[in-house]
Length: 243
Ligand code: F6R
View 1 (spheres, rainbow, N blue to C red):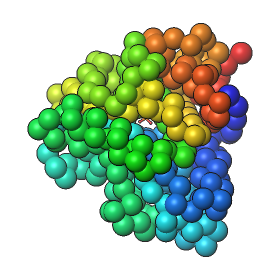
View 2 (view 1 turned 90 degrees about the vertical axis):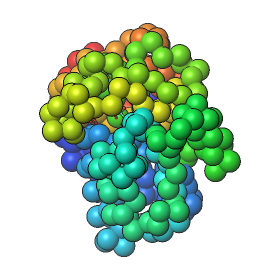
View 3 (view 1 turned 120 degrees about the vertical axis):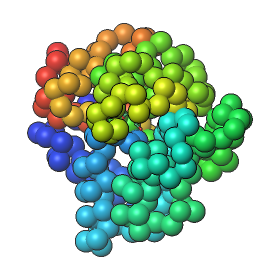
């Protein structure tokens, strides 16, 4: 695992965007696994700037979602499908056919989870998976005590994650769905390169446990220690509790 410490969130976004741009220059139709939430915004903005400056051609890139809320109506602005379309697919000028994600409104959620794992494999697997980290150490929505071998499946969000994400739902925790579909930790570990970005002091404890603690399901992000090509990009605040 390599740990890259940068000054701030904007610098983190630039470092990760450079890594994605380098991948796409070498493999134009690479499959990029994208995270949502606040953290990856600077990455998507920096990558979009590179596209607009003609520094990289992303027109053949493919995008895969990491997770999705269960039960939000189709087209809800905070469904992760909507967020990825708005923050990644549209700014990069990609078509909707370049994008894949789990179906959070499926009548048979279990079948939707199996179908998504199969679709990822059929697409050749994820080349670079961008991850954020929850304050409780989750990756994707694999909450503490998720099996390190888990596959894409339905999970119940912890109270802490619902509190953390209420800001996307007008501050009202009751509006935050209780269930999600998430790529499992085992699924995530199959990506060829994992890039975890963490910024801000509220991530410092989780980062320290993930990077320097024992590999344990109680800290799902510690599973990155098992991966042969994992990069953790942290700003100085998120790095503040590393030894
Ligand atoms: C989102 C996701 C989550 C977030 C994490 C951090 O697709 O998978 O693991 O990355 O909850 O969220 P932010 O970046 O909003 O602090």
